[in-house]
Length: 171
Image 1 (cartoon, rainbow, N blue to C red):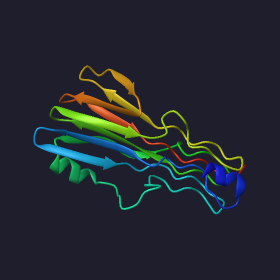
Image 2: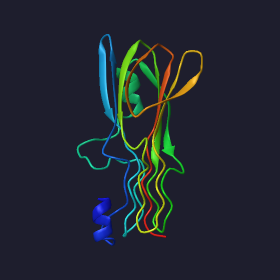
Image 3: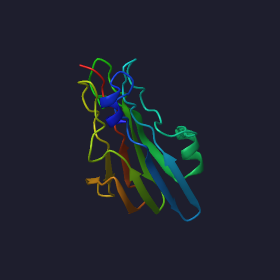
Image 4: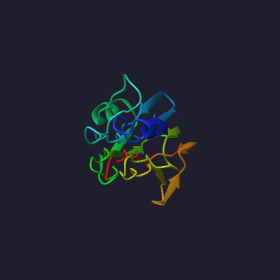
């Protein structure tokens, strides 16, 4: 879309969070796969939407109550990622933050986008913030995780995901 933005600058929006921010995890007796929302790029007609699935269809947010009822985990944080959308005449949408505290031994896989390259702005709009993944071990030590990886999680450990904001549009 960035190339089309140069050819059709008054029709194309700025970059969104990427195609997908995915988390798959499981353990003895349970498994789950989730696609996460993020910021939508702003366009010539207005700002980007906050915490929404972009570039894909037929996916929605899974409520905390459903996750905690069916899976051995607690959601310790779930909120809009304020300040993650790029500035511009029309600002990019905000991403989200979600933290999972696992209650059983779990194997997880991350397949997340825009961790190295930020969602670009168009027509003078600023880029949205890149996504971030992190892990807090049983000792409370926090470390950054790459966008694509697998990890083993022990009870009490936390996996955090900050999805990207969308790029801004216009000066």
